[in-house]
Amino acid sequence: MEDKFINQWKIIDQIETGGFSTIYKVSDDNNNIYAIKKLDLPLSDDLLLEFLKSGYLSRQEMNDYALSQIQKEISILERYKDNENILKLYEVKEEKNLSGKSYYLRMEYATNIKKH
Image 1 (cartoon, rainbow, N blue to C red):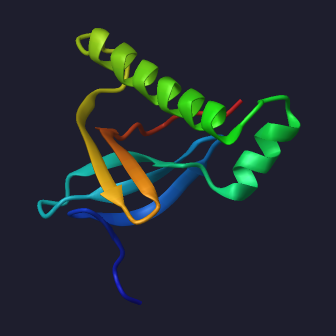
Image 2: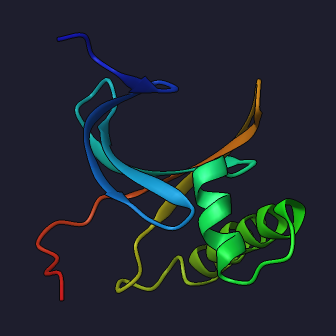
């Protein structure tokens, strides 16, 4: 099986897919483990349709909302970067692609987390 990458990060596993993003477990060349949260804008048609049914008025409004949420998350992670109870944010990348933009948040990989 061929290795898959996000930028220079080797994908080990897809951890979770949420409303706006997908989270991957990745490693670097030195086998350090991180989490990458990836958000693609504009949002996919399937996701947009789901949110439009929920009362959002337009495609642009939904994409603007998704971007504002990722910016808010980045701001919170940066504000509490010295708090040992908050995952560390190491890097944010914005990348243009054929359909729009992708945002990548490279974060500390948490182990031993229990889902409720």
